Image (cartoon, helix red, strand yellow):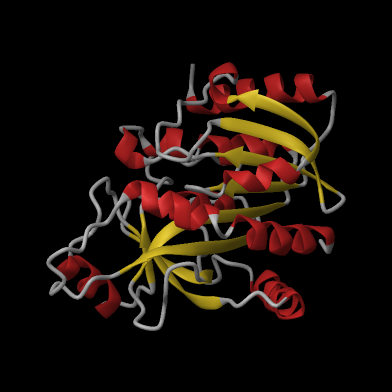
Length: 274
């Protein structure tokens, strides 16, 4: 079965289960941010293992469910956990859910992740609007182009939608949610970055670093879907002089989880205004 046929198989399966209920908004919930899904009303939960073509999500803090229901008055499809290149999946598997959601009717994509802050002013617990990115993962569009989804050479001048960013900033000001804004860089992982790597990433223009997200954004933009993205800063770059410094995966999930309430308020109001 071809990649395109598998995408259609998954979309057909979900469409039958949803009885024509088409999600307008897709949400990708990264490490520790899955609690936003608890606020989705009239939720239908589909474990990834039950959806044709979906892989297993093995990362810490990723439950591995697709949840469809109502948030902010809109029908949303939330991916409670994503797939990563470091898990051993090819890029076609990493971005598979985004293409399935496109076939189901997704018109906007919201993405989130836990990231290490390289900007000197960032602190643990900050929420950073992603205004642009640097992709150091293999490009998910390499290979035969899926013409049904988009052109061979898609434009990436504005990967994150300026109007959605403006809307987020206005809502955050009303809600009293402090926001940062910056450039997100994705690398392969799974090891965390060395102090020298953090310094290099900052030098080339990155404000936050993670192991995901950019592939999903590229595929969404390939299909001309507007994207809004945020990083929760769950650790900050060491200087290299702290002999007792350790990057801890469980601590990162806990730091992301502490931002879930603010993220939920921001995303809910943004989605309500679409």
